[in-house]
Length: 115
Image (cartoon, rainbow, N blue to C red; front, side):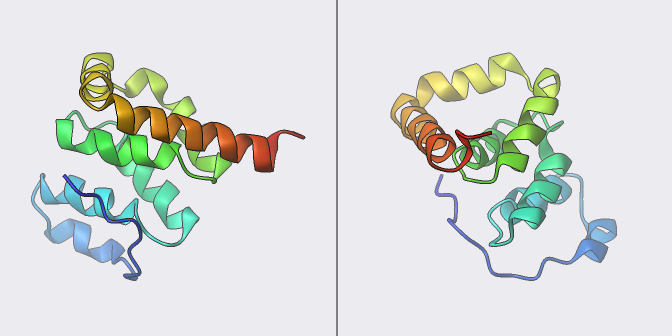
């Protein structure tokens, strides 16, 4: 799976009423790659309760970004995440996870250490 780095689409909230159940999870997954951090966070909240294995990389990818509010959103919803699903993804993608973790630590050190 290749996750787009950034999407510069406007995103259309009204489209959700027209989507199938799977599409209503896939669309916000894609919008977690939006160039606007507020849009990424809003759509992250839509997918955190999803239990589809293909949602996990979109959530993990967000944890390696510099927007602390996104990390706070993930942390606030940790109990909603399926440990078996996320654990399997991390085990199967150890290098990716280590890179994401290092990026998260680096951003924290650079931007938020003083907090």
